[in-house]
Length: 111
Image (cartoon, rainbow, N blue to C red; front, side, top):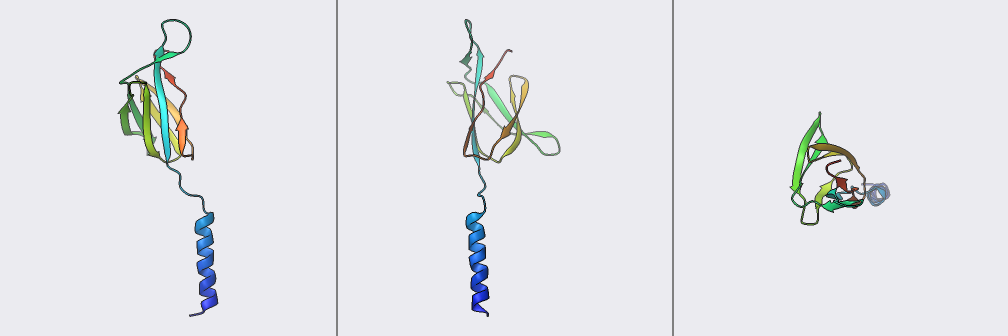
């Protein structure tokens, strides 16, 4: 075996592994609100169903959850790319970015 050539290949492979971007799994968080009785803004909705869809030969359900007592929902370990959120009979298309955490703008039901 040619030691210098073998060592060179190992060094190149090691550098590639260190310099290659790591796959990022994103933690997605959002909130569901209903219009406030007075003024602007919204009131958090507890127990709203949120369905996450992804595109695989058409939009198909991936998983679902319910909002907590503060109106927040969470999805874990998402790959970057386009998704849809189904909330209150409406569909919202979002883009998950390659970052550790991503907050979605609150969704206001009833508008």
